[in-house]
Structure formats: C-alpha cells, structure tokens
Image 1 (cartoon, rainbow, N blue to C red):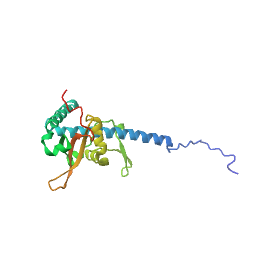
Image 2: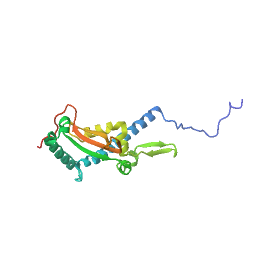
Image 3: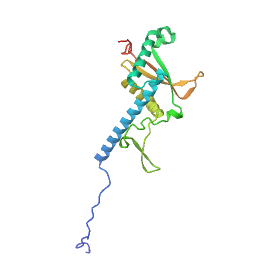
Image 4: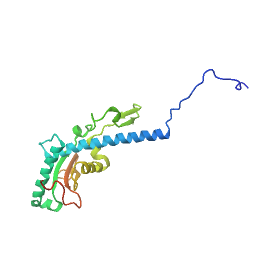
Length: 200
C-alpha cells in the first residue's frame, strides 16, 4: 500500500477560522455594551435638545442652568395652574412642541461622541462589512413607541415625582402632523409633590 511509508515533506497546520461559542458570546456581549452606551448618549443628547425647547429662546449652556430655568417655570406653573379650568383636572403641566423634520430629525446624535472602536456597527450586505450605526432623533423617539426615551428623561433629568409625556401633535382638524410631537412635563401618577415645587 502506497500510504504506509509515505511522510509529507512539509507538515501543515490548519487553523480553523470558526469561532468558539464562548468567543461568539463574548463578542455579542461587547456589541451589546457598545450599543447600550451609544443609545444612552443618543437619548441624553436628544433630551438636552428637547428640554431646551421648554425654556425657549433662553438656551442654556450647562445642565445646571437648564434645570434652574425649568424649575422656575415649574414653580410658576404650580402657583398659577388652578386659574386654568383645563389644567385644574390634570394638575400643573409644562408644554412644548418638538419638530423632527428631515433637517434635524436625521442628525446623528452620537457623532463625535465615541472613538471608532466604541461606535456600534451593523452588517451591510451590499458592502459585505460592518458599518457604523447612526442614531437619529427619529429613531430614538420612535423606538418602542418612545417608552425607553421617556423613561430615560424621568430617571436621569427630572426630579422624582415628575414625568415626560410625548404625543403626536395634531392640527386643528385632528390630523397628525408629520414628525411633530407635543411634550408635557407633569406629575407622575399618584405623586403630588417634587423637589421643584418650592423655592429653597
């Protein structure tokens, strides 16, 4: 038999390119962490822009200044809302409108926020490679009907006892306005006070 005494002149070692289940799991975990950090930053940046709309032309440069402006507006609302028949039923509310047209609705909320290795990616079948994901205001406010975004605002920006409500804006005929939202800061269900209520 010819194979019994044959020895190849060169020994080959074949490296398998297949990843182990542990490697795959670790990569998934890393991708999840990257996406989580990017989503948090995108929600934070959109919250900053949204809360600026409540204070109007008095744009604030720091989060402390923004909170002071919102607190003053809230205290004024608490003192005056009972004179408005519509507000008596719902309690004090601050209103604003957010416009996410093509120009600002498609901005990348995480641009310049992370190093290249920390930017989430997705597979592009056309280019056959991973490409950076953009997180836009439209994506953030539309994801799971905006619940994660509203939760982010409640948990990270508003004092305990207040929440943000966001609705599709409508015209006087009751038709939805494209990418336009009515936003309301109001008391959480069951709450009748918060840290913004009284001046210290």
